[in-house]
Length: 166
Image (cartoon, rainbow, N blue to C red; front, side, top):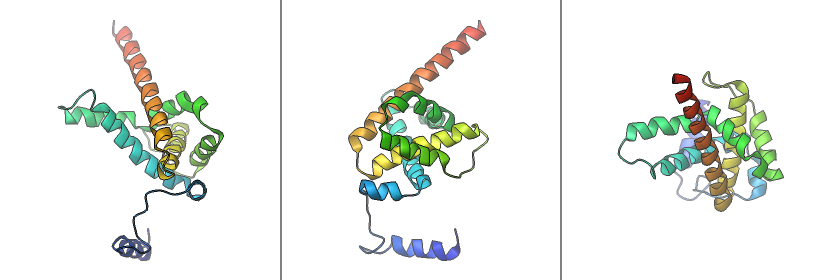
């Protein structure tokens, strides 16, 4: 980010009600016009919070374990698997947002393949678009279905690991 852009952003953040006022919801047309990487940025934050909150129903004392487990769940590898598991439940509009996010130019980390990373970006873009457009019920439906897909895949992986140790 250039220094001038940063200065403008900081100035806007502290305006009481003007251009920098807090805006939590956007209409569907505005969301469709947003950069898919912005949607993924918001979707990633929402999914992190969803997973962390969801894990509290299983564990509340071991914060380090919660952190490590949640970081694994929200990784590109597992988000890609989640997308594959929920793809059939997505609407055509949601699939379009996924494709925009998947095809956005970004750099994959070493911890996932390029395909997994791009797929997870598309998945996060879907979540971000639902959040920003105020579709809370649909967002929770997709979040829970994704969590279940990941949980089942992790349990299957653990089962295979135990069999291989024998």
